[in-house]
Image 1: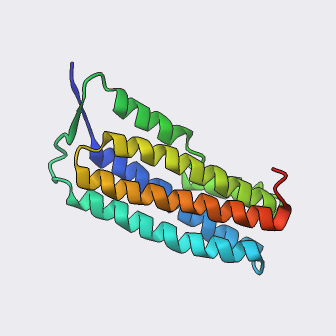
Image 2: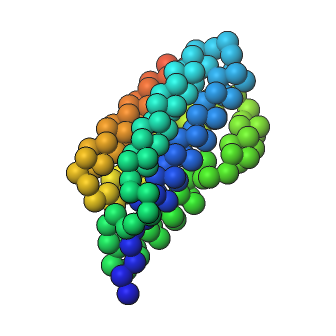
Length: 167
């Protein structure tokens, strides 16, 4: 049986990931202010807001009838994206973000968690790109992957500046 890949659902997951990343960065910036890390968290929060808007625009551009946007012969891509979302460090539960942040003892752990978040996001978005049928969507997601990879570089630079490279 052929199952349609549902881009609506995948983009909703991507939006949720960005919302939870935004929440984490806003809360972490407040918690560790004033500090160099809080400045970085503020900056990344602003950028996550833009990523969320970008995914929302992609979702809004899809046909409203939930029609399949690509075929997933063995339902593998749909299952894989759902699994990747379920393993994402911030998943789709905003309460988990609060719990993770509450358990953090300092800026070092906060930056390490942010790095894990960005890595998970890159992995998920790479798979979302693979599942996209339209070249314009692939290009859009590619741009966001590059942004998330840039976030990783920013966080790594901040981590090294504050704590050395002894990760």
